[in-house]
Amino acid sequence: MDVMYGWRIALWAAGIVAAGAAMLLFHRAATDASVLPFLLCVVLAFVLVLAAESYATGRKQRERRERFIQTFGSVDELRQVIDGPGLRQIRDEGGRIGALRELKRQYPGIPIDMAATLIKEL
Image (cartoon, rainbow, N blue to C red; front, side, top):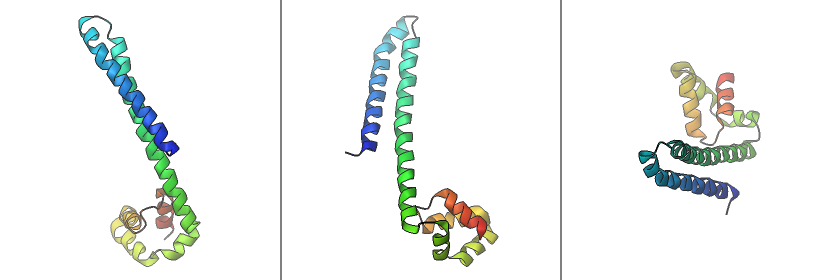
């Protein structure tokens, strides 16, 4: 099992346990004045699940960037491969965002900072 999935599963499991604890504390919070433990469990559940998904997303983006850099090496090598005049025309007619979208469509793994640099330098 990949380390990424191990951490993600552990954080999700902890979030589910916190949500379960919140459900158990819900009845006491409704009848008693001690709402704080219930609220803490609810917040902890959301934070743990958010951390799991943020970690997984960040890891996937780093891996995608590394794969792309291994394929093309640098911005200069990518500049030789892309359709510069076509992207320049799209940039002039539709703006930088349109050209950036087209470049991301042609090369889905390209990191956004590399793509923005290329579009800016066209």
